[in-house]
Image (cartoon, rainbow, N blue to C red; front, side, top):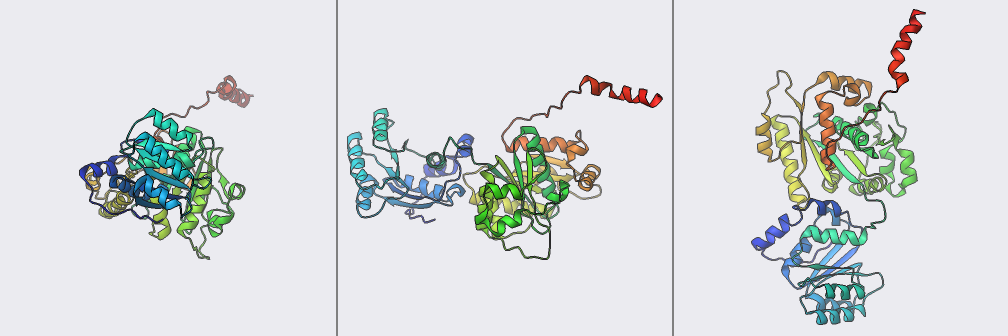
Length: 437
């Protein structure tokens, strides 16, 4: 991605627009979907719009796009494209009166290649101007000031077909330290998500050497995610269906091979390609990340729609969680904050950092605090079951349901169990009568 915006000193108003322009609108954040590999060239009159475009170009949703920003407005665009081919998308800012703006666009149309889209940014909220722009083939018109999230949402709307199935959300689960239970939480939240919403969920286990997804769901898959990562360019919906292991009507796992006699040469590009195919097939993808810091695990973490950090209340977890949170805040300025889960609280004889102090030092309130429950978690792990299957009334089972609803911005829901039929209700009585006979 190339960005040629000129640097400028930002005013307090610019800072407000850049830092908070998109975050106050949660709906806009969810509507701005990843933008495909396109070329975008912008011609601005005001440095503020140039800064907004620069800010948007650094966002994960535009990571595949090639963005360049120039000054000069509509006249500079007309001069530039008399000698150069036009890109996929041209963004033009113009403060000209209506008739002069339309005249500049007519000149630009003479040099535009077929298939090029034009996004106009103007000063006036003029319905007549908007209609005239649409007649001339302009894709969209925005009234300044424009926020980065508004710009990304608009571009996303131009290149994501509203009639097609929406791109699935990716939830990345990572532990602040090895062995804190991030995988267990990922698997139980995924299971709760599939049961509560009755929606398709895929768990992608990226801990290739030591993943536990197969064990936790009592599965022994022959193929899995390593096969897809080896040749990501071959992965399509048909091959994906063969590599997934179905655990229920709604839940499938993309299991890790868990063998040590081979090397795993994983690249950030292969992870991105594989997860892109998966998210085109299901509405929810949960990624079980290993506690190892590599270029590809960092890429997955930064590109995910939501990040869920699991930590235990001790000093090492506090330090590591703080480092992860600081990285995400600096690299994902247009995204919501990561989610925090504090696990294995109140472990007997273990000194712990108080929860409020832990949250205060991180600057983040935990979405769930899960108590140490060796009996339920141990039984579930040994049986290859989820916590709710072992003890549906446990506090942990309720926590997993709440987490699933929170990360999908849904209200808490209860799974309605089918009412027993008359025959099943009387079955114990029939069994006793048979025994007497």
